Length: 522
Ligand code: NOJ
Image 1 (tube, helix red, strand yellow):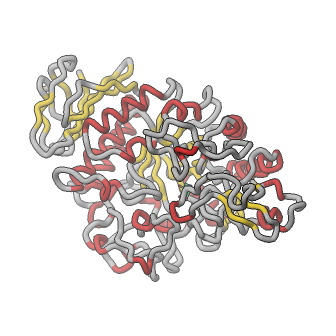
Image 2: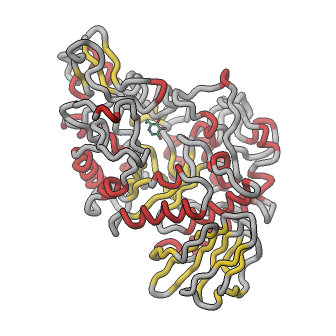
Image 3: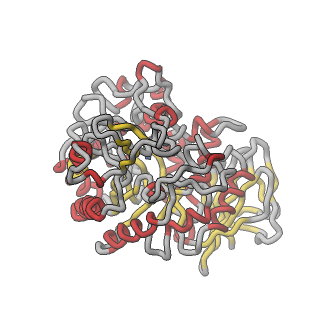
C-alpha cells in the first residue's frame, strides 16, 4: 500500500509555513520503522522540483533540482536513504506532459519561431478567422481554451492545464530523449518508481482537429455518458511513449510506473497496461465518483474487474490532492468515521494496490479555506490543508504561518490523540495495513464477488491455499447477510465493531450497523 504525501502540506521542518523534505524525514516514524507506524510499503511524493508554483509544483521549471521551498537534493537523498532503511520505497511524481512556462526549454521555444527548441512545444497558427486553432479545452475550468496566443510570434501554444503549463511535443525525438533523461536522473538516484502525471494526455491528434461539436466545451471524459473519442487526449502515440518509458524503468531492478489515466472508458484504460509493457499500475478513477453505497461500490469494482485485462493490476484511492476528501465527500448514514472505517476496509482488501492520501488515516475532512487564502487555480485548496499532527497551534505541522489555514478540527482530529487510542481510526488503519501485510491472499489473491445485497458489499479473496471473506455493511442498521455458497463458519480476522479472533456463524452472517469485517473461510 502506498501513502501519498503532498509535500507542501505534510511536515514543515524549517518553520516557513510550507512543508518540506526535512520535515518529512522527521515524521517518517508515522509511516514505518517504529512500533506505532502505519506500516506502509511505499510513499508517493507529489512534485518537489523547482517551480514557480502556479500549479504548486506541477509546473516544473527544473526537473532535476529541488525547489528551495522544499530543501535540496541532499535533503532528498537523506530522505530516500532513511525511507529505505525503514523498508519504505519512494515513488516520485514525473510530469511529462508539460513544463512551466518559465522552464528554460519554453523560454527558448518562445524566443522566436526559428529557435532551436521551438518544436519542443505545440504551436499552431490562429484559426482562419482568428482565435484559437481548435476547440480544445483546458482541464482547469477557469482557464477556458487550451490555447494562448503568444503575441510576438503570432502563434498559439497548447496548454492542457493553465497557460503557465505549456504542453511538450512528444513527437519531437529530442523532447523524448530529454524527458527520458529526467526519468533516468531520478532512477539513478535510487527512487523506486514514478507516478506519471496526466499519462493519457501524452498522445494527441497530430492534426490538431477539433473535438466533435457535441463534445465542445467538455473538458474530460470522466463522464461515462461520453462515448465519442476526444481528440485532445488518449491518442495512439501515447502507447508507444509509455512503452519507451517502461523500457527505461525496466532497465533498472524492480521499479514501478503508476499512471494517472483520466479516462472513463475502462476498456481504453486497460490499454494503458499494454501487453505488460506500458504502465505497471493505472489509477482507477471509478470509486472517486461513487456515493457511499454497497451497490455503487460493488458495480464499480465489477466493471473494473471485467474490463481490465488479466495482467492489469488495478490501483485504488479514495482521495488525492485533486478532489474533495473522502470524509467530506462520502455523506451517508451514521457518523463519518464509521463510514471511513467501512471504505478503508474495502480499499485495503480489494484486488489491487491501495493508495492512501495523507490525513485520511485520521479522518481529515476538507479544510475551510476562505477566499482570501485560496491559492489554487482549480479550487482544490480544501483537500490540501496541513496534516494534523497534534492539537497545538500549528497542529505540529509548522511553527510558522501555515501556507493554508489549519482547520479548527485539528484540535480534536489529530495523530497524537489517535495514536494511543485503541478505538481511533488511525489504530484501525494500522491494524488493517498490518493484516494486509501478513495475509498474502489479501495482497495477491483473486477477487470474487459474493451474492448481491442492497446494503452489504461482500466478496472474497482467494488463492489455492487461503480464502478470505470481506463483508461491509453500508447501512446503519443490523443486517443478516447470506450467500448459500459460503461455508457455515469462519474465523474473524478483523472487524470495525468487535475484537477479532472468534469463530463466526456465516449462515447468515450478522453484521452490526456500518460494520465491515474480514473473515477467513475454513
Ligand atoms: C494532475 C495532477 O494530479 C494535478 O494536481 C495537476 O494540476 C495536473 N495533473 C497538471 O499537472
